[in-house]
Amino acid sequence: MLRALALALLLANAAYFAWGQGLLAAYGLAPARQSEPERLAQQIRPEAMQLVAPAAVQRPVPVPAPVHTPPAPALAAGAQCLQAGVFTELQARALRPRLQTSLPEGSWSFESSGDSVRWIIYMGKYISREAMNRKRAKLQQLGLAFEPPVSPKLNPGLSLGSFASRDEAEKALAEMNQRGIRSARVMLERPELPSLWLRLPAADAAMRAQLEALKPQLVGKAVQACA
Image: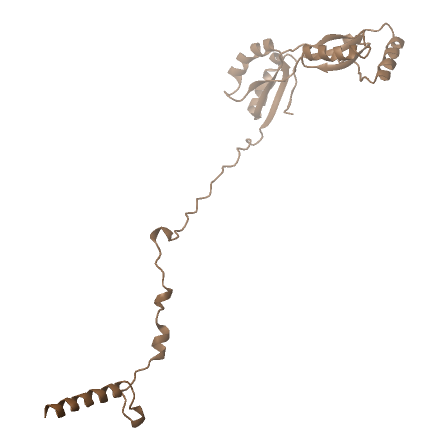
């Protein structure tokens, strides 16, 4: 009895296994299969997913606000830059108090003209133009450049070069001596004289009228547009 029951149970299990695996489908015995291909196509592929660390997340870069550059201040209507000169330091010192009482503060200033000292290698004065022409011919044979001095007091004469310091002029003269120049010498043609321009960057009609009233104190210096 027990053997028959065990055999029946074994056959039942074998039949269920065959039915579940579809081995009996040829006999019309098979479980119903659920197939939804559209749902499978919409599934996310887990193998393609990647974790991103917080530090690797790109954050938007803030765009700096545009810098506003204010336009350069324009001259007031009818204003223009004027200057007068040149004045010596003594003349400027005498004129400053009148300017301070007549013109607005900060509307004028004295500026240096930048004149500098001038040393030259000089030959002359010659007693005649014929004598100077003979010296010119010799300098041309030696290949040395020359020109008339700027100062009228040194004419008729020749300048073989101008220099900002005496030492530079002396060095150049020593080289010329080696080439046969014997009568040349170093001279101060123009001393360094302080000279100043009176400058009004934005003179309006009222300031121009004040300048007209100050003409006697300008010691004959003309008022003109800035260079």
